Image (cartoon, rainbow, N blue to C red; front, side, top):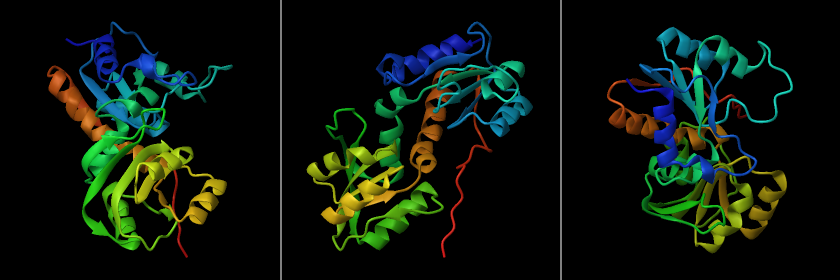
Length: 254
């Protein structure tokens, strides 16, 4: 029977934890590595609904993208998600920035979800950005609809363009600061999230099309492919994708 440590070692092979950013806290964060695993639940975030789902479905392990423990813990009580996980006997492994940059990780999955072809890495200094081509050229409005449909996005902020869009750069999560690399690589549009106001001003002034498609929706694309990899490599455990993991934001348009 596979153990929690076996799952940790597998993830360490496909997205080495040593490649994470120095401010990150990816790794084996809660639990006993020797514990045997029959069920694993995958989710972008470890929330109380996700913990309850894991408990109800009998999962001994949650594998998440965002670390269940991020900053220093000064208290450890029932209001703390890591405490609740330990209390319920559920282990947690989190693969954050190491999975962002990994081959087949977050950004490759985002590019694939948008059905980009001829995907390549963009030299952005961090190994995050990917670029590919749409099957056919799209107008800005058509491209927005394409992204919204493929990522199941509730709303998109964007800078408009009259240019036809063919080459698209992507960076899941908070990639606004990297937009100049997308421009220099020849992208017609850039899909990312968490873009600051001043960057929107700069991109609008430069006439560059950027879509803020939300942190959750640009990164959640990795969960299903990761579940498939785990299922192929751990035949003795049932791999489950969370049914309650969701975008914490809600969208309204007038």
